[in-house]
Image (cartoon, rainbow, N blue to C red):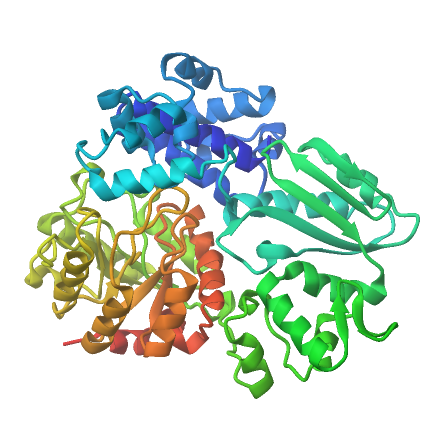
Length: 571
């Protein structure tokens, strides 16, 4: 069992417990443990084999640690199987439809007796869903469309879920005899937020056993094809993986072709046709003669283009920019100097203030901002004025002892329905940073939701609009908001937008990142970390920013602390 498989079982346990009206803290414990496991670079199976104490990992208590050990050793979780006997297993299929999380499935099950996809389809067509609290006509229509389009297949997987599998698979293949190069191409290399399958390219000696080693990978559930230079497998998770062994002379052409995107490749193919050339996965040809193809850089130079980073290859102007010397110098993880959104045990975080600061210092950060939730979120013990002032004092004391990092005082303050903020101005004024977010009333009209945020931005203590569209990938749609007007509002008020690096958020998306850049609004790339392990999510936020054409100068937490404070000082 790899980390992704273990996390998936724990998430399923949390979903079914939530439908079963279990204690919310118990549900949150399973979700937190799943999140921690996904963030681990080392396999839980390896930790179990070394008889390590799993309860020392953030957010994993002794009870869940024992369950993880059971999963690793047996491949099963008896408590989950027992729960599935009580809660209809068909409900799990419903939760795989985008926009139907555990809460909505529970409502459909309790109120309408919906137990399956077919039940859901009938209820939608009969107009019974719209009357449920929190649904309405629009939601019913959306559900109907998604059910009609439902193929029974799982949605594309989050890139964070696939990353561990890709890493383990590459490590496995590197031990093959005669293997030279290995790279994962496709949407994974372009760092899209979700991945449908994996395309692996290799170069190797003719006598290499890399294909056989590929089909022998321990996660393989089915070998679909097995040739001398290509093989396709389905992993136990359902993910399809293709391995192609290509000659060195064609490596660059194959890497370019299988990285994509399709639209980018077609655009380059049209350029080739105009020059009486042909380009495919084997190289660039003049007639029957291959004239280049060893490296991607050679291919782009053949067409008078600068090298285009994989994240930009979506045919959204990158070819024109490469021809004219206008490609952005994309931001990298090394440019990040601090993290401006994270939580501690004061609310729903799993590590202490001191632990978060020390972990950030170990990652080379110059500063962090502690932004626990404000009082409205009672379910996570949000901070009222008194507790926030006490936290400020604690941060000031800790800053006196820290040498390599400074902690900024902050809050993740709720934007209320009328656009006011959840804490009074005299409290917000005492902070270095205010991260403002929506956690309620997701179904306001586009006009009301947009004006809600614009009114909030008028407050001089509004700094960063966190996870601006509220989406949870594969789980919850973005709320209806005019993001262009919001970006313009941020520009007019000296505010910033967040690129939330949580793998199931990645919010802003790449298109909105580029819109912010084009409109002259800077962003903060932050992890919204709820544990020390979550701090490593920064790379996913940077990936998203790169897909949005952002440079280091477009991101406020690439600045020195002094420069950052100047940006935050609106008043």
